[in-house]
Image 1 (cartoon, helix red, strand yellow):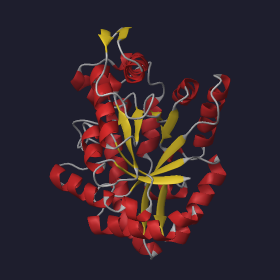
Image 2 (cartoon, helix red, strand yellow):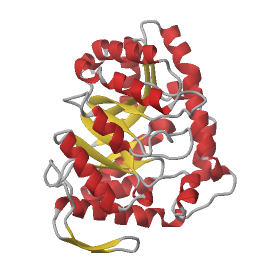
Image 3 (cartoon, helix red, strand yellow):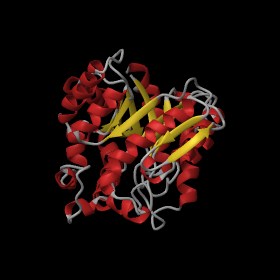
Image 4 (tube, one colour):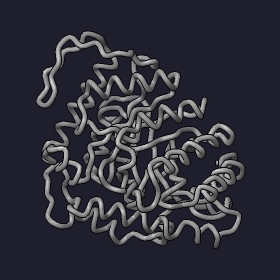
Length: 349
């Protein structure tokens, strides 16, 4: 199993400036090669403290690519619903050049109603925009003189520049939250999957769905599964819990607040049951996340036990993507956590 780090800002100006957040993030990236972390990843979101500091993951990853010379750079994930595929393809290829072919390109549908409203995009078009957008980006990266007549974007005889460093293109991943259909579609397309194990044991069934869909579609191998976890490693178990507890609780509240329209009347056929998903997330706490092994918090030995326990629940997976500075975790605590995890956990995973 490979393990990397991810940045999902869930703070606003009242807590930390954008400058301070990203400068601190780069300091954490500076530890990646020293301890052998496999990737650096960030997200695309807008307008709200939940993710809003990261409207374009390529910008941060281009900076991170100059700090780490070995880790892969992961867009986790870009949103075709709010971007033209012509721009996405060009930016991904530029990032692939800047990192010398270390890019993994992750895509997501988006799921926050306030983002759709502000961009003037119908949530009922989410699936169609995603499918069309990913298909168009793929063609633009893989081929030259591309013509595509789409429902949302059309173009003729386009050769996107620069050409990708990785041939025929960087590996593609699809982000999925909780719906079986999303896992099935990612598997059928032959892409890797990015998921968040907040739902506990349900993840096993979703990953089985992903792998079965890959096999039915004739794709070789079981695919690549990347799961995201919160992580705080400390020599003392009680100290680890004290440092991580309230930041994780605030992170969870930030997520639920950002998605609150789902529980107050937002509806879309493209997001079946999302009101129940967000209601369930509203009941999550530090303690429930630790109990489900979705948060890796504690001493190195405790975290190793947590990893082992989770793999027994859901089976093997390929990549763990760790949030190491969630909410207002102090930089010093995040750096010490990465150091200790890198020295005591990574060599034993």
